[in-house]
Amino acid sequence: MPRVQVHAPQDLVAGASLLAVSSFALWAAAPLAIGRLGAPGPGLVPRVLALLLGASGLWLVVLGFLRAGEPLGRWPLRGPFLIALAVVAFALTIRVPGLVVAGPLAMMVAGAASPETRWRELAVFSVAVTAVCIGLFRSLLHLPIPILVLPGWFTL
Image (spheres, rainbow, N blue to C red):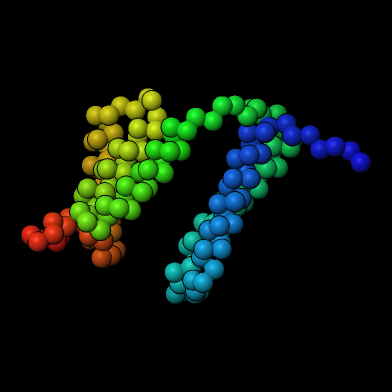
């Protein structure tokens, strides 16, 4: 039996990781109703995105066997750790004190994942993106996302 040779181990590992995340997302979205195109349910977008992510992962796995690519190198922990920390920081601050703090905080923590970060540009970008998110989620979509919560004083 002929041996299958991996030509791009980095692509293979990346594709397998995307397939794992896609499988988890499909499993997590399983209890949500899909609905139909005219009236989409809460499970439609997560499933479609998970399937697209899985297709991308499958494509990377196939490319890992077919074309030459980068070998596996050192895996620095700074990036993944700070990105995960940014997600946790957002989750802990979105309810209190709200999106005004949670958005820029998460982006600044995530920005620390790269040693090439330009802090002043990142600060301006994070404030601009947060303003767009407030306009989109609160004004256009009318979602009940807390913008600014100061317990005992006011909620916006």
